[in-house]
Length: 130
Image (tube, rainbow, N blue to C red; front, side):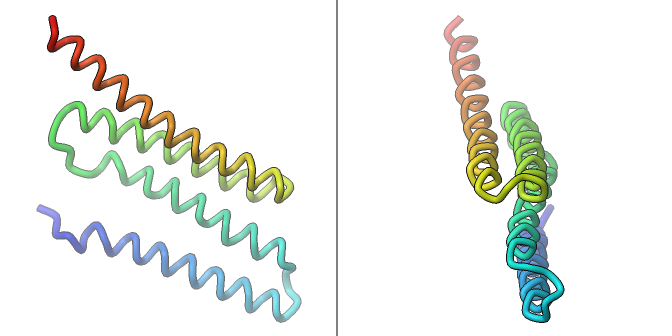
């Protein structure tokens, strides 16, 4: 059985890595090696990778039922895909476009997961009513 810290420690390590990346990128900007846009793209792109990483971990958690396992699998796919698209936008797209489309992609992933949950619930109620 997993201890509570087994779920907390990887998240804290990931957050610490993003902080170290932000500090390193700021240091490089102050020395003139990179510009402000590159710092922004690195740090925000890393956030997208973190979304994808947590999405990859989602299906691996212990779910109490088959329905919960279906939801965690779908949510995992949704998070991985939206996180990778978000990162790609922040790497390649102009910053205003990356802000609007990136936010939309992550929101779409969350909405898709919620819609899937509601669909499964409606299907379960329909089957229970038969």
